[in-house]
Length: 161
Ligand code: ADP
Image (tube, rainbow, N blue to C red):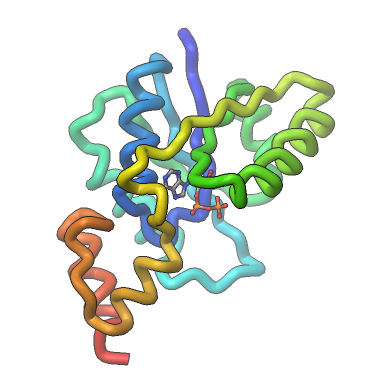
């Protein structure tokens, strides 16, 4: 069985993330979306909220699981015994960071961990969790960016600020 892990902050998941998950699920037998619980950051949504958003958004894709993890990605991969990591690339600006991280992860795993990149669908190439939060702050139309229930959550949390 070919399994992969798609790690990220997902604060919150956007249609761009969901598109990558759907496409990865077509390539791998099982995809685990792994939400990073980073105590050093203050995300808008708690780790449980971020996990629940992803569970709801992917409930129709049977070979997708959603979990959270803390600490180093490589340690999580070892615990799961899965050494394929999926990441999304939007633009060249993503590349440098992703490249650095994949080399670091490869080193930390003695070359065992492979990072596989999915190019963004062109229609999501401009989309990021932070830009979606900015639009929500000014009560902009979020319908092209996130599922409706996520738009409601964003507006509830940010819309009146
Ligand atoms: P990070 O994990 O760097 O904190 P995110 O949680 O936003 O960032 O993203 C997780 C992964 O999804 C990253 O590989 C990121 O490049 C990718 N990604 C984010 N938004 C999009 C998008 N619109 N299209 C494709 N990939 C994306």
